[in-house]
Length: 253
Ligand code: NAD
Image 1 (cartoon, helix red, strand yellow):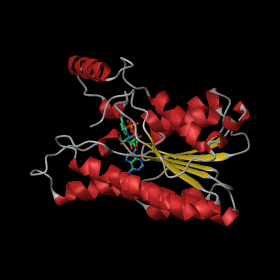
Image 2 (cartoon, helix red, strand yellow; image 1 turned 180 degrees about the horizontal axis):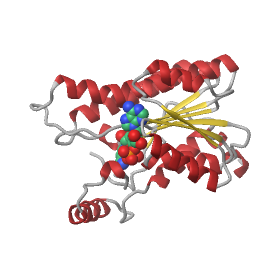
Image 3 (cartoon, protein in one colour; image 1 turned 120 degrees about the vertical axis):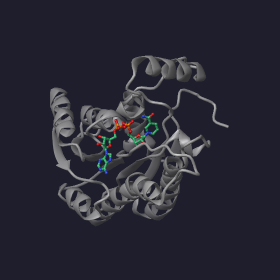
Image 4 (cartoon, protein in one colour; image 1 turned 45 degrees about the horizontal axis):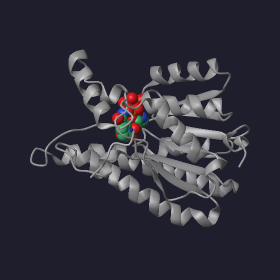
């Protein structure tokens, strides 16, 4: 297949969580590949920063200040795209609490953003693609946390495991429409989410995560954006229902 398969010229992509980290890198890379990009997030200032980066690369970006837990508002934002070819449902939050300390409200909040937020984005995208007959691609954001337990990761891991189930289920339901649905499950990536706010502690974490990887380094948001671009474009036209794990080769039990 020719490298033209990576060209998204004339296509439209919608990215949630686009104000920061991985979502921002996705918006910029999808725009560099030629897509007109819609950027959604809670953080209006961050969205402006992403839109400026997209424009610097010669791309076009429209911003939507929206909470992904609000299915109505998110649906309206997605429906405002004339046509939708790519959905990258990236928005998410971190939460840590042990099983014994976990309160119902913690679980509701994390499932609300990390699972229901992704579900709302997938529903809105699938409805739009079916209505316009677009053979689009939906990419969800899971996590390496789905492959292993870890202290404090009950709520976060449960939500990401639900994203995997959503991805596999939706892939089977959307296949007949020619719509592909895949997940990316990143390893440890250097973003505001993984910033410990203390340079010594941060350096220690990054040194540890680098040692865990055969590649000897931590991941950057652009590493994940390239995985999303692959799943978004025609290069992956026979790939659906899959979980792609850009994690530097860190062995998961
Ligand atoms: P980040 O904190 O830099 O970015 C997350 C973005 O999501 C922020 O801009 C935030 O404002 C937005 N967001 C949060 N709640 C929202 C809501 N309710 N509505 C709309 N937007 C909302 O984090 P990141 O590291 O770039 O994470 C992006 C995704 O990748 C998340 O789903 C995260 O779980 C996943 N992930 C990250 C890592 C990592 O190591 N950084 C690893 C695996 C998976």
